[in-house]
Length: 489
Ligand code: ADP
Image (cartoon, rainbow, N blue to C red; front, top):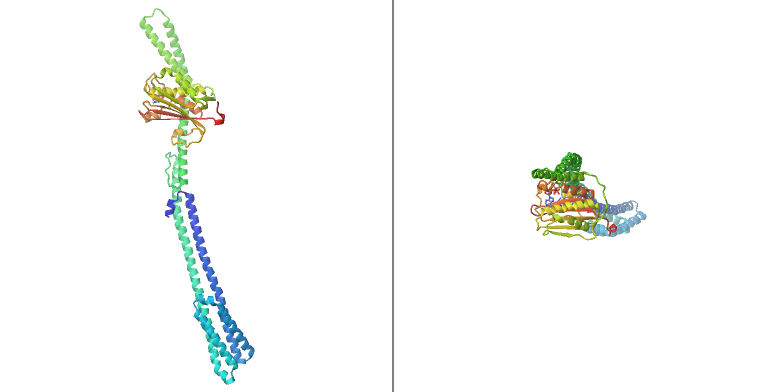
């Protein structure tokens, strides 16, 4: 069944098989019906020919009566039946033709005429003459009956042949329906049931804990759709599992970090206070003063670290206001002015009226972290592109796991691209982890991107990073936008 190989969907395959059997049965039934009609015609012809034969017998009966009793009524009845037979022979012209017996028809006409003239001669003759004519009349009558018998025989022959043909036809119909049904059944089993069984095995393996993507077991649209839905679900499940794990890890880490930070805060404050007291002593040598100043600097640094850790773990109320993105980026760039080399080419391409509902302070933190990282990754003569676009139509989700959980339309996409040193693939998968940094001690704490991730998630958005070593890095974030009619002016 090559046709089944071409059809790209299970529904079509089953429909084609169903209609194939239905049309075959209908066609064969119509054919058998037509043959039955032919048989019916033949049976009707048999009735007409039987009437012809009965008339011939009646002719002979009245002929015998007439010879026995010599009554004129028998002669008249014989004449009446001869006339009736003549009409029947003329009326059955088409039947004689169908049976291929037009010569018998012609003969019968002649035989009837001869018979009529002989019996009339018999009636007109004297007793001696009648004896001579009687055998001739009988012989002519027998010929008429013999011709009628020939016709009956020929008609029975055709009816028998039709019955044999109908029996053969019935066997052919049943056999071909059975053969075609078996062939279609086998093709359906191969093309429909087998892929479904493979799919069932794959799904059972999933239920058994296997976490590999399902292979597509056949080219049919429904199967491809089910498999891709399953695989999408699987990826979604994996990403949610990771996310859950991460959230749990972070929650316990947050508790621990805040506890450690609190505990460190007091000794650092005590050391710093003592250091301040000692620094007030005028009897210090310059070397001692220098050492104390170093202690003072390191205390301030440690206090800042503790503060930022406490800041990171502290719960703050979430604000929700329309934030114009261009304005936010420009303000962030002003904050980072001290870190921005004057030769660095920073380009912002965001419409003035592009607004997202957000916590301004938190979103500002996101921009500061991302732009700061971009500045640090690029050379002084490098380039940073910041673009923002609003999407009103739902876009097909890309296969990137990072796109899972991204907001539906309308949404705003913000991308921050630099042409810096880029991120190797083995590091790229870890950059959003807390306390992951590739920077030197004292330069980075590794919580910048982690905070970015948390804030974007709090905004029901999503973030993804793409990079290649030496080819720069792009961070793309998607945030839910307000419907156009609710945009702030
Ligand atoms: P930190 O900046 O303190 O190291 P982050 O969480 O902000 O912490 O960043 C984590 C790591 O991600 C960085 O140490 C760096 O290796 C990498 N990274 C982040 N942004 C970029 C970028 N734009 N280009 C190259 N590497 C980056």
